[in-house]
Picture 1 (cartoon, rainbow, N blue to C red):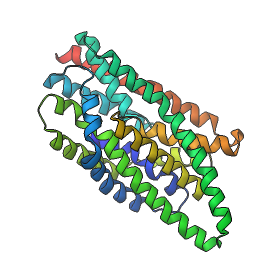
Picture 2 (tube, rainbow, N blue to C red):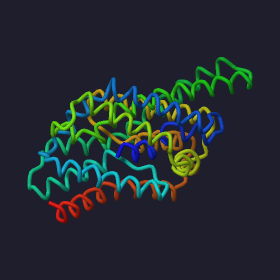
Picture 3 (cartoon, rainbow, N blue to C red):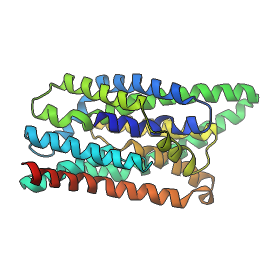
Picture 4 (cartoon, rainbow, N blue to C red):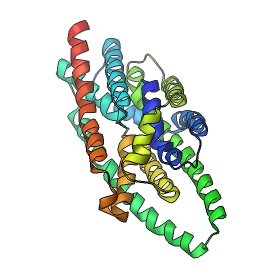
Length: 298
């Protein structure tokens, strides 16, 4: 599960930077692996507590939830779609709740509302950052060589922050159900989940990177920096709240915010529709796989 998450979501952190040729692919995956583990260990506890309270689990259902979500995310990764691991996990948890006729509706509604507000919030943050920072840079009137060097450094800093935020926000998706069962302590869950995501980052999907970085709108270095920074701020806020949300929704929302700010005509509507369909089918797949495996083995 951690591998599937890291393999898919590294694109959300460095996809725009790699696609704009300012950060090498190898550098991107190594930085992601290191700082996603740091984020999981330092900031992952609140999300663990939220996700583990959605429904009661047994050892068997915890295993089936993780397998169902991992299969769903892997399938979407093969389709080169940046999808939500959080949605896959919560969809699988909902499947368990349906089978057991026991689910915490209030907690589920809270998570779903955060799913909706994630891309919208990231788009708004991107629009605000774009206007503010662009105004500052115009006043500086930098030489193009200095500007290019600055953008490369800013993209690396934003990517490191994004990796940290991803680990803090999404580690609960990997081991939260096992911590709830008492099979892992919170600290063990943070460690094993973070290592899993880091391993996935090291073998991340280049195709998903290009979907994020090139196919929604054409991105220049400055737009790439703003997109990653807005994505990272959004994830960090939800990690602090304690709700695991979608890194994919955050980065796509940020990129869309920039696209609408520049011109709606620059947005690749076909690519966007494909991504939105992935967001819809991911929790559905997680739920269906979980129900199927539960009926088959429990």
